[in-house]
Image 1 (cartoon, rainbow, N blue to C red):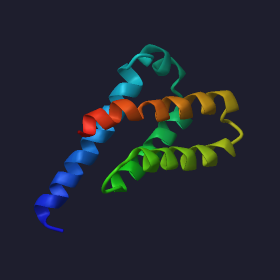
Image 2 (image 1 turned 90 degrees about the vertical axis):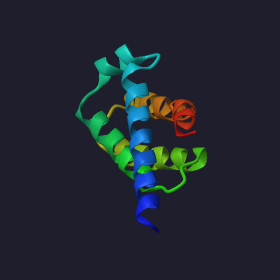
Image 3 (image 1 turned 30 degrees about the vertical axis):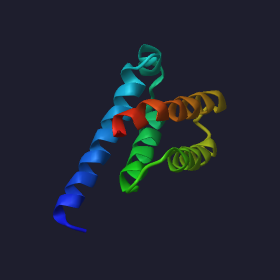
Amino acid sequence: MTKTNKMVGAGIGVAALAALGTYFLYGERGAKNRKMISGWILKMKGEILEKVEDIKELNEEEYYRIVDEVSARYAKLERVGAAELKHLTKELKDSWKHLSKELK
């Protein structure tokens, strides 16, 4: 892989991260999302974003797999409420529509 290809891939990854974060905090339900943010939510989002960065060509199926994988791990934590986790997982999956537009 050439240096140019690496730079383009990194740029796409950064754009995807920014789009996802922006949508989550300032999208349709941004005010509501900002209120419910706690430490575990930020940590979970960070893990998802790190995994998304590692994917060369991100598609909907791969994105959903990553969200499900990380959500399943967080479901085992005692401090994470099932309702909050379900809501966050749904929000993250719903953000794919916005994210895919940004990637094009």
